[in-house]
Length: 112
Image 1 (cartoon, rainbow, N blue to C red):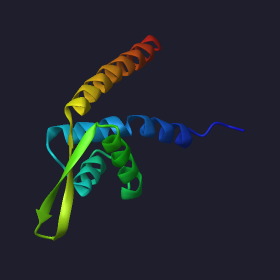
Image 2: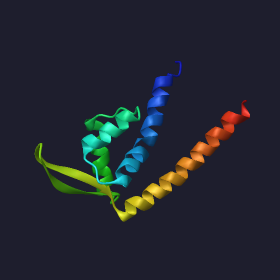
Image 3: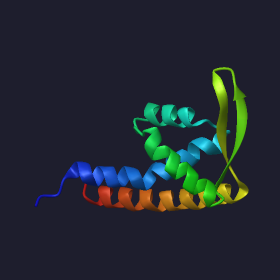
């Protein structure tokens, strides 16, 4: 059975999705639709059905917290933000991303 590049790319996206979401939340408290919009602008398409379980898991792990804020467009909204533990976790992920990026760049440049 041949390897499907789309499947591999999908697995790669899953691997860095959490990191990308935390990068967005680190800047300021955000509502779910704001996260989806920023990811879409970066050409990373994610649906709410994927995002909510991930945010819930991060909240349960102490990485995120949220606040309810009144909305002029309907019911109150949950705004997510990083906890102190979340900021340290993001720093650890940033270190890991740099390692991955450096390995890939080194290997790509060796083939040139």
